[in-house]
Image (cartoon, rainbow, N blue to C red; front, top):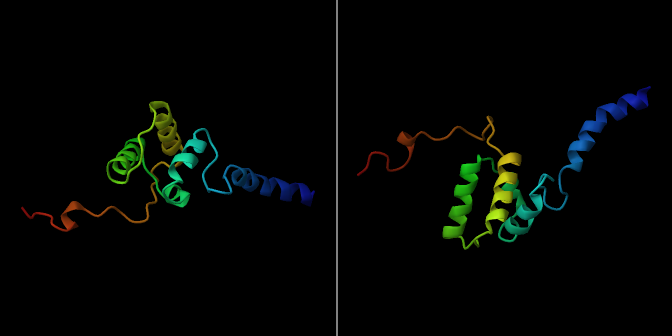
Length: 112
């Protein structure tokens, strides 16, 4: 009986662990291979897994990297797969590291 209880308690933890790629730390879901192939060439996958954003912000991030960091253009289908994956698996969370800084506290606010 105790063995069955231990298995039942540990089973969800094992299921979650199986969904993470050991080499990259990426959540294994549709599209993860595209993220592994295209994002890990320039920076650590940990940079991806530590970020949270909605689809539009992920798109803005891709565009910024394309405009300023030499990221190549993607085929439309590949870009859709990457954005779908990121938005689904790394969405914004309510528990941010810190609250966003109000614009009035940003350097240069009110200067013209």
